[in-house]
Length: 325
Image 1 (cartoon, rainbow, N blue to C red):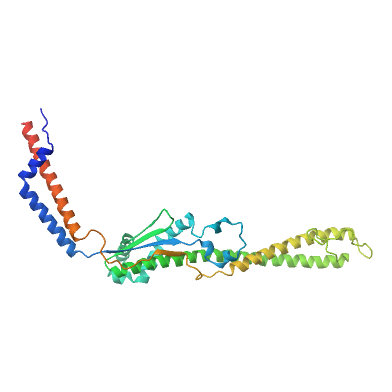
Image 2: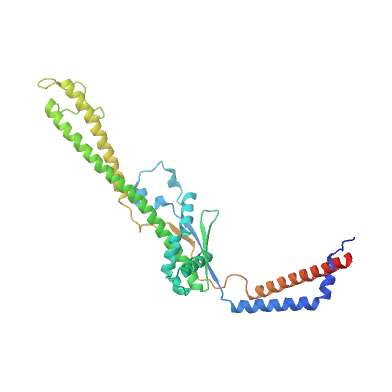
């Protein structure tokens, strides 16, 4: 049994035999596409590109820090890890809910917040309309699509600003927690220093030794402590020396923590923005997607292709059936 061949010549013959039907289908589909384009609400896409400032420059805490050896200060822009955090935050449900409320999208899309199905529809629509991706230069490209051109730009601007606010708030919480821990440690050191101070007073009065004899003190003078009029000076020197050295170390540690606490106390949530625009979201002038002409042409080409495919397939099946007979 021979299998019928079906080459380009046969396809041309099929088109010729069914030219009227193929042309009718093509024109009808093109008209349907044109009418659908006119009826359908146009969508407008606002675009923006954002770069991230290095969080180390976002507050006076790190600007005041003596960090000549800290190589992170070489890069004024956020690191790859910082951009990853922003990408996670910009796509978070927290930012989504805040922007929806701030821009009044429930009212704009005629949805009821009290209806769980409407809330799910609102979330799905927001996530469908909003898109963000990072570039090879560690910047973030984001866009928002809406049937209202002005609203698309406003929502996108709100997304960037809300993300910046929440990211700075995240950094502020981290620093505030660190400041609280430092202050608690200072309080604990104050109690220990007071305890050692009271012990030193009692020991000096007991042994009648008032010299500074801590090994950590730079002005220590060896063999200057006289034993005259003192009660067991050898024991007194050793005990006072041990306690005084511990107290000195605690005082040094407390001074370092105080400096850190002073730096952390300069935190200001509104100091410097972390996210900055490379290109701001402006109101788009043209609808996104294919225009009227391209939409009509695309529908016509698609209809022509599938109609030719359909008639060719039908002709091949008929030829195969005739061969089998």
